[in-house]
Structure formats: C-alpha cells, structure tokens
Image (cartoon, rainbow, N blue to C red):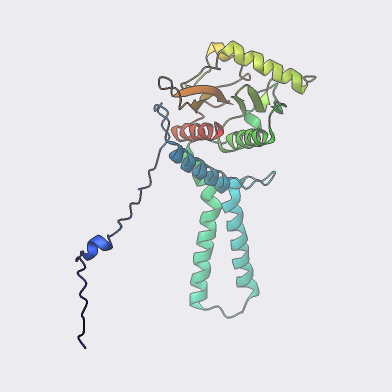
Length: 289
C-alpha cells in the first residue's frame, strides 16, 4: 500500500510579531504647587490629586478634639514618656547598669526635645497664633450659614471655616459661594441680631464691597483698604480675599468664572505668609467642587 505524506507549508512568522512586547507607559506624577499669580487652572486629574493631598494635610494637623490644641501634642507626649522613664528609674530594680543609664539619658533627651518642639515651631514660624487677648473690643463669636443649601454644602462650609480659623492667624472668616454665605469667628454685631438679620447684613455688605466678580487675590498685610472698612471687624490689620473660580469648559474666552470668595481677617500685621496664602488658595480650589 502506498503511503501518502502530507506536508503543510505554514509561513514562518517571527516570534516578536506573534507575541509583540507590550511596553507599559506609566505617567509620571506631576506635583502642582499653588501659585497666586497663575490664573490657568490645573487639569481635572491634578485637581483631584490636590483635593486628596489637602484632605490628608487637614487630618494631619487637626484631630477634632474640642478644647485641645493639636500643636502642643508633642509636648504632652514628651511629658508622658519622661514620667514613665522616671518611674521606671526610681521604682524599678535597685541595681542600675551602665547601658540602662545611657538608655534613660537618651530617652529623657528625646522627651525634652518633644517638650520644647512646639515652642521652637512657633519661633521659626515668626508669628504667634491669635489668642483671646488680641481680639478687638466689641466683637462676638458667631457661626451663621445660609439655610436653603444642601447638607453636603453645609458640611463643606462648616469644615472649611473651621480649618481656616484653626490653621491660620485669622480671627474671622467669611465664605461666599454661589450666593450662599458662611460667617464664622469674631465679628462686630448687635446683641439682639438674629441669624436672618446677620445674613442680610452680610449680603448687603458684600454687594457694597463689589467682591462678587473678584478674579484676583487681594491681600492687605498692614491695613485694610477704606472700601472694606464696613465689611471687616474693627481693629483689622490684615485682610485676605481669595476668589473661588469655577472652571468653564464650554467657554473658550473665559476659562474661569468667579463663583465666590473666601475672606479672612486678622488683628496682626503680615498675618498670612506666602505658605498660608498658597494653602488658602488650595482650600478655595477644593471648595469649588
């Protein structure tokens, strides 16, 4: 019987064509620094990264404990560890070795450094935080907010006003966004003023000051301008107005539309450093949504 051999002519294809190498492209992380002179908004992805970094920075310095100053946390930790070391030294074994003594000396040195760390931070910062003694006479602490807004916006305004007063030298803040108002801190008000009356007064003062269409940051480090005397509390030395700009994708001529502003006042001259102003600008970008 004749055998038949079948030969298949399959074209030879190089391996790199059959299994091409896939080169993974990884985008490099772009670090965006807030610049008060830059009017061009960052892309949406970078804005999201800024919001996440801002949230972490807020949580890092604010524990949310009522009546507790988080800046003194290293001092209390130093006191606690120093007390434990002393208790271990006097109540522990009577025979103290040289390595144990060296360890205790090192621990007490670190505890002492933690105790003086808050004072060193204030000294290097160059400005003392505002206390009760620097508040102007005739001011009262208030916290008023527009009522016809959603719960999410209320939470954002409450949290934003809290961290602005907590992390800066401001004594009062006024947030105006899309027609809604949030005022917090020490303001000159009448004793019998209700919440509705205060909101009406703030609305009228904002309209008279002409800040609704503000696009550039205003900063008066030594004294407030005469046109803002009716808006800010008496005794104000530093005034910062940071606009809240909404990014417009449809319009090609006007990419940024003002939707509000953040106003901060202080009784100290040069109260807001360059770092503070950059951080406040990042807070305004987060608040615009």
